[in-house]
Image 1 (cartoon, rainbow over the protein chains, first blue to last red):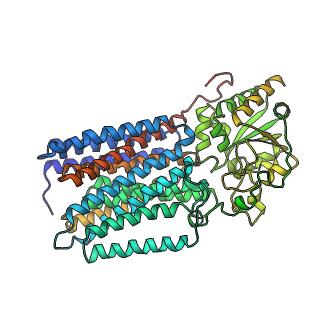
Image 2 (spheres, rainbow over the protein chains, first blue to last red):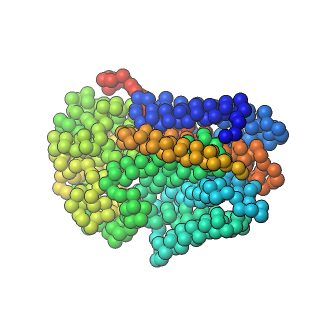
Length: 473
Length: 106
């Protein structure tokens, strides 16, 4: 067993402290009251380990200070980009932001693996097998995560087609890419540490990342981002193996495992398997074939005044927020509407579907921002039986999560997804920009029901009109 | 690159145990915290910036320096952006006094 110097031992202790801070951080993040502290604890552990490595490997190491300029340039650049990105984006664009940060991490992991391989390869003897395997894993998974995240970002941001992009033979191409990666990997590990082949190996992995995410529909991007997050964790763990560094190993593995579970939880909330999300090309069918904007549905329109009266004289209103509310930034007027109705003695509750918006928790975050109290937000299972007592179900920019086709139409791509029972309410008022289909690209038969009335227009403007209407009522 | 047998075994132990911890820690989370949790976990794997620092510390030759610099930038974006964006999300979950009067403006 190698003898450790005092400094080495101190390093291990620092890694241990950081690892504990990450574990506690994730644990605290799992509860609303401690979540913020959890994030701060993890950030503190991270700062500690970065500072420590700066001291030991740059300040105290021979010649280390000569390389410190790399940090002096790189860290401020990265920090500014990170802070500006994180602070500037509107809450609606959070998912994209997480995707981009994740891609950056994946890219960094791949670069570290590449740098390690390039340094050590090319000698006459083969590198030790565990080292090469970890390097290859770090490079391939990091690369897939990098380009996959970029595509996910593009789909959420709207500059890459949100619909599933498939071409004939697309799955064959994926299989060929995978085979090429496995074949090259075996060759690189067992036969020759060839640098050109290694670079080809990385290039194929970059293409694979694009190839894997393109066929997945925009509505499923949160699950994809979560999965890629887990991938980056695994890539980081692999580089931890390569560098024999416990901080990387533990943090990477933690995220790899917890990200995997989180991905499963998200799929479960949509009542679908991960396999179905990744390979079914959700939204390929219906959206295109039933494309006519209004389909052949006849819908009933309602004025804001009439809708306001229905609510003002009702006994219970259940508000169903969706992505449309997020886009229109309608959360403040929505809260005002809630306040007015409560003043009049109308009970108001919010029904939050697990996948409302673009990410789980998206609606909670927005409504919390507008100071809607927690206890008014009900999760689907909690509130689904209450719709029959509701005078009005007010659907604000939500579509697929209210689609009754999910219950009945076995041919529908969202068949089997649990939905909010808005159609059980006495009246359904749907605030919607236009008759366009939802993110899954399918029509919603709810709109054709006789008890449903549509209020077209920008969600924020419509809600403001409702507020004015309730005041006047 | 000398990984001794002992170090290899120790790393494997840590890998497996950490995987179980990751699984346990996250297996019970309310839906509304899925996004902040994903974002927080995303920031945690930003620890790759430390790996990038190791590469930077031992970088010789322009190619390795470029790789190290890029890795440091990307890793820092991941860490800093990840924690800041998570904090911003969680800022919106601030506990407020229950039964607050509806007139109060937020």
